[in-house]
Length: 322
Ligand SMILES: [Zn+2]
Image (cartoon, rainbow, N blue to C red; front, side, top):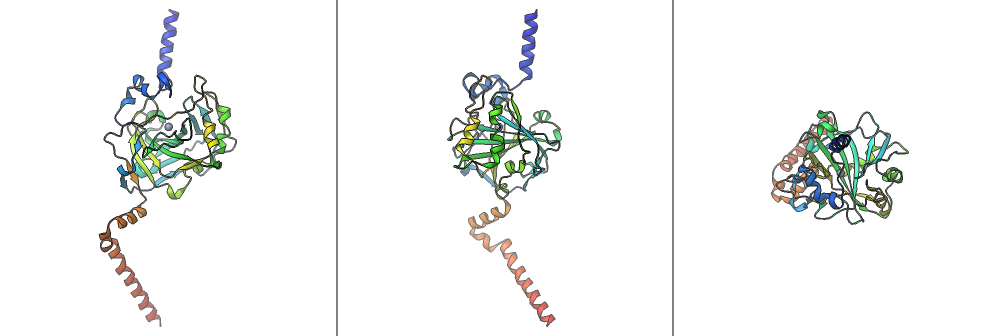
């Protein structure tokens, strides 16, 4: 009797901790996720390989991040699969615009994916090229009020993805996170950053390139792999030194081994289109470059007479004043 109750409790416990029994090695590795999570064998899974010659160029309204310019108390946690950063800020940062339109998404957490060495580690690939690290900033749709509720809807989440390359110099922006990694080596450990974090420095490292990104519809890259994510992958790469990257590989798995890698292999694109957002002004230049006939039509022909008329009016005013 006691044994059956214990089994029942164990079953209930394992049931409530969905997604906690996966890993990146052996029987728990990505090729087995589908055995326990049917949703991991869907047709619109992430990550993917983005072939730049196979994207559709578009010019979307500006992507806007709000409430990221105040330093806020933050903490990191080792959840056994990655290191997660959350803020204690009661007023969370929000995101809208771009592929999200007027829908507002609320910042939930950010985390990292990495590889065994500096030649691999990113989840999405660009032209089959892997990067040593990828950061995901996860936002849930404000309408759904919470992350848990958002997970039940096809447009529940959006993730900003940042790709990294190796630089001889350490990147000071990441130092406050990297210095506490030794304190969260064991699974379940949590550590508050020594200084309040300015989210802006992580999420908008370069305002001029923020509108240059790939976007597509996909899934969570970890079980239960729900297909509810609008992915926004920035084209500009961030920089980290070899030592900074290596610090992440010392974190431990639930079994006590080193978490040397935590990226899912790419999944088939199937019938999806990957869009490449090009800021409007830049797109105009590109169109003009590609289309020689453009010079003789449309905006250019309108602008010329306008400037001549303006000059004429100015000349008349000067003459009248004399
Ligand atoms: Zn992720």
